[in-house]
Image (cartoon, rainbow, N blue to C red; front, side):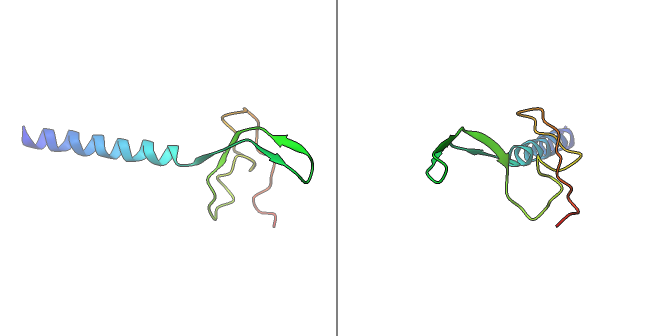
Length: 78
């Protein structure tokens, strides 16, 4: 019985950590006024900054789950 409880607890912990890491991939950006152009930028979501070029919404093979648009940027181009 103890082994079953330990296994279920461990499984729940792993599932919780995986769901938390999936949520951490996006960052909410507040709306702001851009004085250089005189325009307002609406609130939006972007990928959390990191060193990878392959996990961004705009990279080919990926899509933005908030807008449904496919990525168009080539990750191999510098």
